[in-house]
Image (tube, rainbow, N blue to C red; front, side):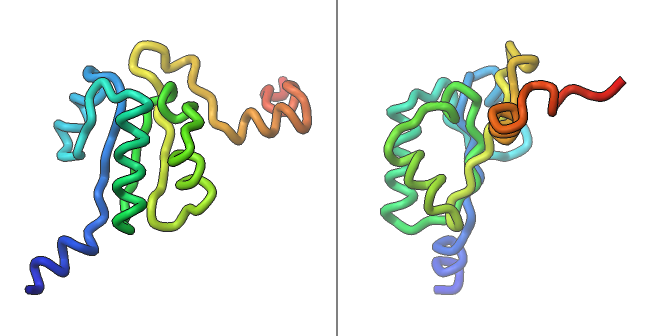
Length: 116
């Protein structure tokens, strides 16, 4: 019975994104969903939420910027499911944190430029 209880409270670590990027996560033992779609992300989040599971979810940028209803709920609710955006394997230079965008919107682009 102790083993079932341990599995019930276990935190899942799951990465979703391009198959090539997911190979790296799989090599370190993280559960992966290669070539995930917004629909597969929403289904995963719905299942985790409805069963009150704990998880850390790594999402490739195109999935993290998807504003599906379950992703919005998870981000608003927080606590049991943590969502982390990761850069795309083929365009890492396009990756910018959401907080960077907020700072840029509030203070202007110069706020993020290093001073010379």
